[in-house]
Amino acid sequence: MWATAVGVARVRALETERANPLFRDPLARAFAAAGGLWPTSPPPPEGDEAARRRRLAVAFSIVIRTKFLDDLLRQASASGIRQVVLLGAGMDSRAFRIDWPEGTRLFEVDTAEPLDFKAAVLRQERAVARCLRIPVAVDLREDWPGALAAAGHDAAEPTVWIAEGLLIYLPADAVDLLLARIGGRSAPGSRMGLTLGSRGVIERFGADAVPGSAASLWVSETPDDPVGWLAGHGWDARTHTLRERAAAYGRPLTTPPSHQEGPGGLVSAVRR
Image 1 (cartoon, rainbow, N blue to C red):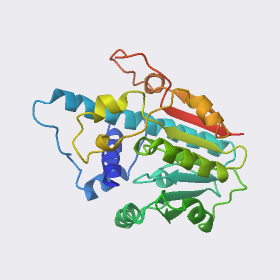
Image 2 (cartoon, one colour; image 1 turned 135 degrees about the vertical axis):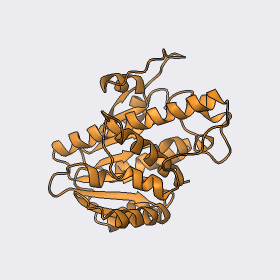
Image 3 (cartoon, rainbow, N blue to C red; image 1 turned 180 degrees about the vertical axis):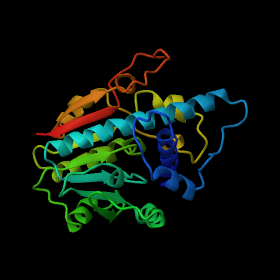
Image 4 (cartoon, one colour; image 1 turned 120 degrees about the vertical axis):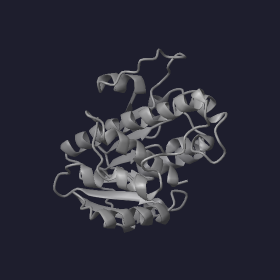
């Protein structure tokens, strides 16, 4: 399933090559190429306009969420936070492409297979991290808080947590467990950035998804009241819709909402 992260890298590589990209990810192309997704990726069946539109929509959402979380991380750093944890890090290259303040430690939590693949590409590219990057090879279904602590994470100091493109794959009980574990290692003032599946996305994208594809594995959507839900976990949260953020970034959606938009799936939160 980690190969989905290579597909995300391809989207980021394409964005990087735009004339006015919302972000630059110089390593994304190398990740996509190593995973066999550069310069092309498997096209949808010929004549399947709906599939093409779905792919474009997913790619657009990846670009907007990447910019959203980049901004959140920079704001957290500016506030003085020097610990970053990327849960399900995949091919994330923020350790290499963001100008981190001195003393920043960035933990990449993922299973060994994607971290090993990533390490090989990083060696090939002779990439140099701009902070202390600490890979933590552990399955999120296991005792990842223990592994994180063993790697040097200090729960007494504020942390900024990122769960990007992750929660949509987890059932509700697993999401709540993940949040409880995050809370257990979050000092007051910690921050968190989440991406949640928007309401109805599973029906729109997953109903006829190809078996084994990313969309076929989606199981979780935004709760009816995400702010209240996160308050119950000890976080003061704000939600943002993809449409709101896209307009703010100068990439407005040109299509009108096809349904009444509910709470946004881009979430920023502060630990009480």
